[in-house]
Image 1 (tube, one colour):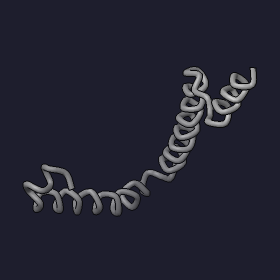
Image 2: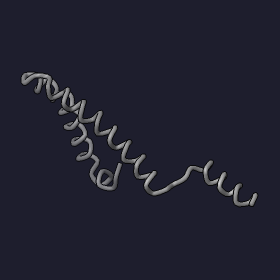
Image 3: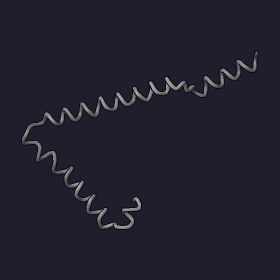
Length: 81
């Protein structure tokens, strides 16, 4: 728990109960409008995670970070010459 939750634990637990209830009730409440929203949400999460992974890889490449193996190989080559 964070500092605010420690100061007022009743508020923390009531907020947690409301959020949990909303997560349980929301799918049933939205089922009346169809299940398209589920597919859209799933695709957004899937592609969001994929794009995030690609961005992380690209940033590491752009920043020029080398793996420990590459660093060790470069140091070994420097010592040999």
